[in-house]
Length: 190
Image (cartoon, rainbow, N blue to C red; front, side):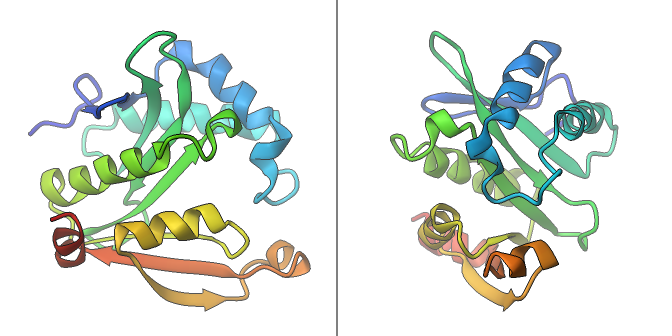
């Protein structure tokens, strides 16, 4: 399967996961600016300038010929066709056969109707079946219980818990790293 910028779409029951387009910019920047989006971020990391750079980076990744990173918009398949967040599998900095999974929902969609589960399942299927990955990993701050529940639902195992960055330690948080193998996903998704 050719995963070029033109045809990169993953369809789920309720969402279209696709490369970002210019029409997504304002919605992306707006939810990034929501103070609730910044709860688990380092101060200054969630600035309007940084969010604009992220958007540009995601668009650049979509145009790469040999893609190492897939950062996709999560868009409702029915009206109002709203941008619900973004998700991705990122391989830069990882060994061949491994990518990092990330899901970010706009705060207005947190905890709603298993959105993250639906998106997570689609990304894992894409990663293991289409990209033929061996391992999908991820990390979060220890205080992010939603991600911990999602990783557990996916059958992921915690690999390490470490102090993390200074800003995390100042808040009493650790960095939690998890992973799931193709075999674990196969057993979990039956």
